[in-house]
Length: 329
Image (tube, rainbow, N blue to C red):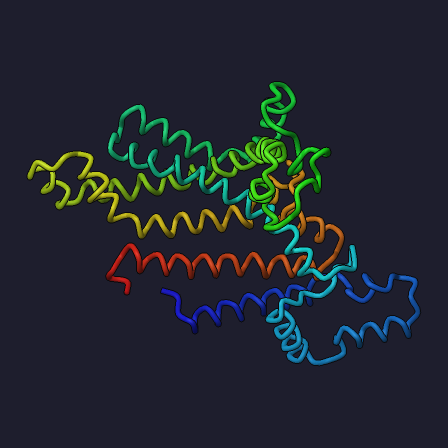
């Protein structure tokens, strides 16, 4: 269980690592601002303004203070606060990853349970092959093939981006989640178009989470189904449904919480290739663009946010432990 102390230490370690990364990268933040043709006096003035003339410990304390106030500095690309950029792009990633994890859980958990119950059957073999392909197949290849087949040839889904060009900024941004905002505005045309754009990348992410979740669910269930209390329940004449879902599955819920939380966190921070392939304006695309442009404020700000996601999801998992397992209270 995470305690307040361990959370604080983890957060402090995360901030320290991102701070060090920003200092050891072979990129001069002053030159990135003033340009290579700036005079020495201009360079020195900006150098002092950024606090780079102060001891490293003092710089870290300033950095820590700014981050705790959600101040990640200013983006070198657009001169806007990085916090505003992250607030703008993160809902796109959140929406994509959320649909993906729903897909993975709704299909992955029952598939894993069924594979364990029917161990050695064709269903088990199919589930294992699906998991193996999900682990080994490059997502960028699947994404490109998906666009080629379902968008280019069949025309079943929308193309890259969150919405078509005719629906950009049609509905007011309330939550930043285009599907939710379209529903709040009552604009079914935008909702339909947005859904056609998100369904393919969300399904791809969901497939990779399905592979992980189904495999772990199968492993957990096999362990429970071989336990003595399951044999006792069957001997007493309990129905197979009750044995599987009310006894075996009930005892793996806590383990599944961790698996699902980690899978969700991986989708939130690991969807970089998916976002690039589908031109999805999320945080993965944002960090990649910033990295290629040497915009370290944006890179470090995005990195801190991704780290915070892992910490928050771990806290949420601990809270769910107490709900599903009274012994954790």
